[in-house]
Length: 377
Image (cartoon, rainbow, N blue to C red; front, side):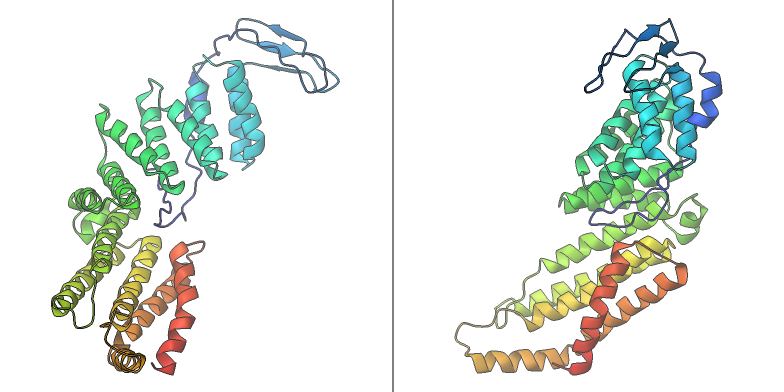
């Protein structure tokens, strides 16, 4: 499992970016790399490297600007992997970049591109990471291509590029390699988040429902290797309903004012239930997202009614009276929002969540809302 989550207006990037390297398992069986055409390089302000190229091995002599070296594709790859193990991605990139540049037809290049993609993803260089994972996915090695495409989807989610997500998951669905239950949940959840990020609510809802249908119960979710994407799909469902609720416009003394209130309240209630389902999925990061959104549901409903457009014929005094009385009557909505955000922060402390957008937003909002609730309208 890749176990990556990103934030696309959406959460959370709390899991590790460094996936167990396929390289470590495969490098021993790769054999020697094939040769590439001679490619002398000239360092800035210096003379060309003196090099001797054999069929599979190169020796580069020392110059004023560089030290000598001897390497083939496999050796460069192994150096890069060793540096990645030590969390030294910048130095690993030097070795892997050289491999790709000097031995572009070597059999180890797709693995090198995958590992480059990991380092670039860690550095949040999203376009470069996407390019590396796309290159890795061109391999004939089915498992490596499979993992590279899932990584490309994760990069698209983190880099706020829904198109990368959709292209990667389209490719995964067209491949012959069967997907596990967890992979299928991830695929549809990522597609749902990408559709949501693009503002395509109906499509986001359909993709999320497909993910939920694979693991529809709490027991089914807990049976998966990873609950991240099962929870993500449920958050998407709640967010689709929340956005539909926010689109319902209420105007004081409008002929359809009562119908608008009923419609919005029904949608808010439904979204709350969907976010509760996301919390029950058990993933702390997405639970924080759901908890924040529940509070937002009630705060936004309060704002929509208290700050609703009033009839043009009303004077300022009439508007002040309306807003004061409505604010007093609807204060329980703010109290509900406050409770939701306080519970989100409590959960975050209990589970040790850090670097989570939704926890940060709840923390920023709770003090302001507490002051408003305590001071009255």
